Length: 389
Image (cartoon, rainbow, N blue to C red; front, side, top):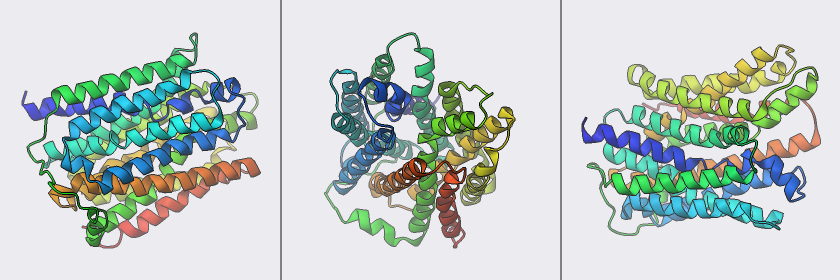
């Protein structure tokens, strides 16, 4: 087996282990609310604080071109260690909403050195078949994001703190794996000087800009959908009192289903063009947003769950394709910074959509709530159709 073939599985495993930090708080959210006497709206604040931390982190990493000036594997390692440390802080007693938000913020901050940097490492190793490689990488992100929900069910007989201890341990292992076995890639072109203007210069390229705008539309929907999957299931269960759902396991399965579509999307894009494949998934995702109000009315839980599984697949499948388009239309020496600044803006958008959905949920019980998420895909579809080759 060639070195390039062994490198991808290592990057994927490392990414999976480290991104388990992302929704670790959401996996034990009900326990946090009860243990620390938090109000229901803490869900939106704690979820958004991770996103906000990631935004600030990606902004810092991008402005100082960290992933392009320093060894990406070492950046990944130190970020994983520090992210694991702040994630573990949740297990201590006498927390307040402020301290919990702060811990989630810094966890998100150091995730900025994991997710986009992991993609940067992949682009340093793979030029041909980059869409397929990033498909596997985003699939790892999806599984890592879903894992805390599964751990909550598997570790049900143990303290909720075991979920946080497990995810922090995995992050430490993932960071160690990356720094020991993944060296600088053959296609890496290091940037030797600090150039803050790169964050703005990359957007002068029309193809880069339109790929980025497609990604921004996708991000409006993605994390809001993921964050509120348990809420979707609870809402459906309340509307149909005779139905009982295993919400942690279903939440895991709905998010994890996206890992399959990410890999499939990578292979499909090799035959039908990256842009067209991204357009197709974004369109299906948009239709799911618009159909969601009607699905709540169905009394057949199997149809409802199948719908959510399908939504879970199409909502993320275009993510590696957008990242591929972004990477392909950025200068080689600036790819790390380009991927990071696009992530920064994309995750800023997620905070807006999460807070809007959270506010609307507190104000009304209408089934129309999640159709708001269609705004993003519609925006992305409009931009992708404008002459992006």
